[in-house]
Amino acid sequence: MKYILRELQSLSLKLQRREMTLVDSSVHIKQTINVLTAMKTTGGRSTKNAEQGISSGFFKDVELTEGRGEINKPRFYESVVATLTKRLPESSLVQTLKALDKRFWPGEQEH
Image (cartoon, rainbow, N blue to C red; front, side, top):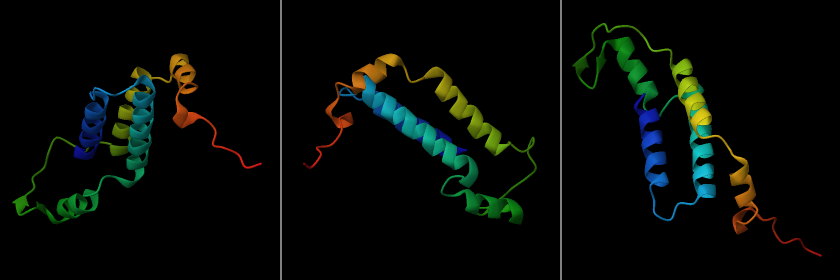
């Protein structure tokens, strides 16, 4: 679950940049949503190590004990993505501003 927090921290730091525009923020938010959606099925970088630790009863030389229960990972990821999508929707203003941003203009076509 720490990978969700890392992604959200990264997004937060990007959104706090002084040079951040509304269009850029929309792009970064969509990228984060895509990453979290992909992580729902594959997990983070150390998911395999953590799962091996759970099955062996030890993780990084620390004995693991029973907790309060298991978190439904796919549902948790879905919830975070849904919350991001709900709170930060693509607005018509962003679409209008994209037309003014050179990065979104069509490339030059050869004659």
